Length: 403
Image (tube, rainbow, N blue to C red; front, side):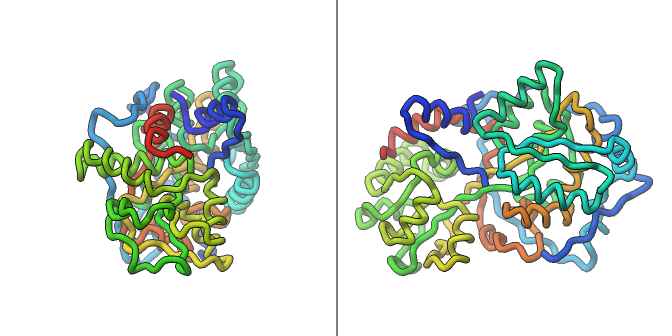
């Protein structure tokens, strides 16, 4: 399967253009150890039904198509989440991980992310020495699969997004299930993949409030096809995830023919630019008033720095989200340590660490989370690993939107 990064790399090499893919509470209680609990996929992993091959990705799945889902509000709690079984890591898994004494991780985020996560993890489990290494995004999949196929697995864990489906397909993933993932997550990982989603990226309509008023914005996507918006709507030249999520949603509500008509009309009004951060900078400078698919974390960051940006409210459906996942490697030297980290990543402490690392936590209830407002009263479209054929979608997207 060709992932986003591998596809963009080929595109960049072919065109001579460098294309950059986007990757990017109070002290939380430590996870509660439960002496009598049986470990989940740990110590001696139980057989699961996780496939050795991921489903083939297509531009539009022939089976049930993913639908936008409402984000439920966190339930009121009178006691810490751990009291309901959430965050309770089996003591047998903790003991086995401590006996292994080390944990090695690869990932495609920035090095400071893994330094932060490792430091927070080691506050709770100092006996499990953490080594987290950023691997250049263009070479992550090749490195992981080369090591796996040669029988020289160096990483116990790998952190990435769409590449995880390729690892599953190659039989390189040791399946893990965190029992409370569905209960807390905005976009839980598909069970069939055997991986754990810890954070996400999200796409939103953001506008410069000095150039346009909230009341002037249309109340539907179709409203942006009005000629009055010509030259005022920015879209990044590789906004494939946003396009796919919106296309799938409109196909269900409008039908395929009207959806094609919509994108044809929208493209006439769009301004195509390279680089999502640059688009935000141009919008702050007044070049255009609206970014149709701004990254949520960048909106929060720019606004905190004083940019006159606002979210369109209510938000148009869907808000496309792209989860990042931790996959435990089959044949790794520290399998229990890997599974301990996967469980810890979805505890209060782990999600607080994710926030500290300046990533959007995937939990619906993280204290003091500046990103929480991005997901209030919205329908989300989770773009799961392996769902999107980037080459096919890029061809379709480029048929409408040309720089």
